[in-house]
Image (tube, rainbow, N blue to C red; front, side):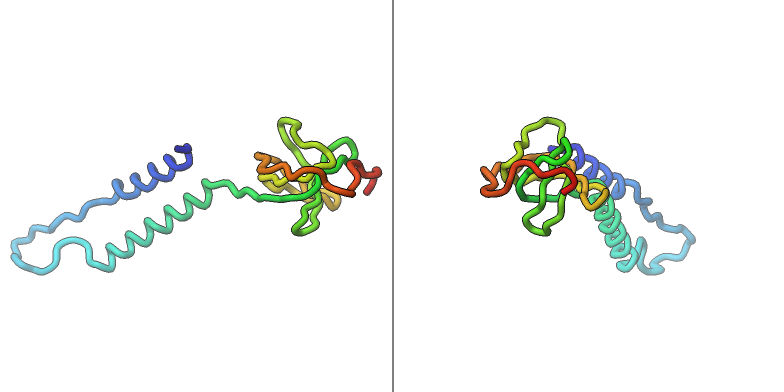
Length: 143
């Protein structure tokens, strides 16, 4: 299992274990009523723990985006224009498995927008869809 799962599990267990147990007050008055936290307090603690776990999970799990389109060369780098939103992405990747003129479905992190093109850091090639068709493999500079 991933490290993120274990982190979330550990934090959840720590929240449950770190709660302070209720102690009875001894004052010599027998049968004064309910001992321990009320139902409202228990519900409040459970809701608070659930919110805390939700926030931790939201912050720990990375936000990845999937894009699909034709990979083209542009100014010495690779670029992909998304089929879905027609947004242009400058691609970054550790290994060069992407080939210009081919359609890919990619998973990664979207970066900042620079001069009309967003950066997209590829973390995984989901699928090589084959040749692009009638689109050129290279673009003229400045396009």
